[in-house]
Length: 194
Image (tube, rainbow, N blue to C red):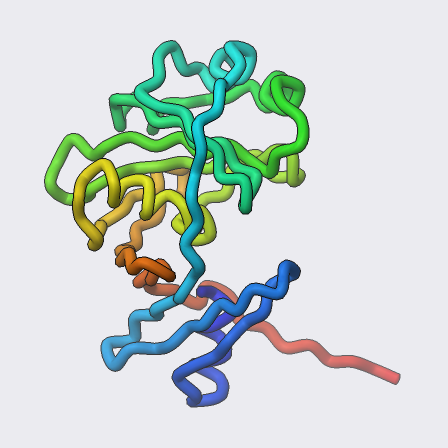
């Protein structure tokens, strides 16, 4: 989304398609109101047993559900309280040691107010960064997960990271649309000498 914002603002075009490292097309467009819409594929999840060591590392005592996105190699853990979610302070060394062969762990909870449908946080110390502050890519499976649970296809989501983030998502049979905004916070100029 941030890359799209810069491209849209600097070129005047209003659509751009990115191709990621897995050769997946990610289409983005700029709406008339300045919002950016990103189109992602939609993926399924499957049941998984999460080891107690992982839950302990995250600081989670009880879970509602646990799933796995094989396409993303991400474990999804649903808990029952957004306040608990916001207060999670994982032991990242213990978290890495609790499981091999994944890209991250997503923890989510149904919202306890009408401002949002669900909250989530994404921890990925396996990739070298402890927590992603605003994560769109997890919506490839998270929106479908909540779509089944809440029996709807349009969502207001909140990422409970320290920085926080908000986005709207819309579920279709073959794609997920993410609606959001980006703000340029720093501009610079490079001078390349000979």
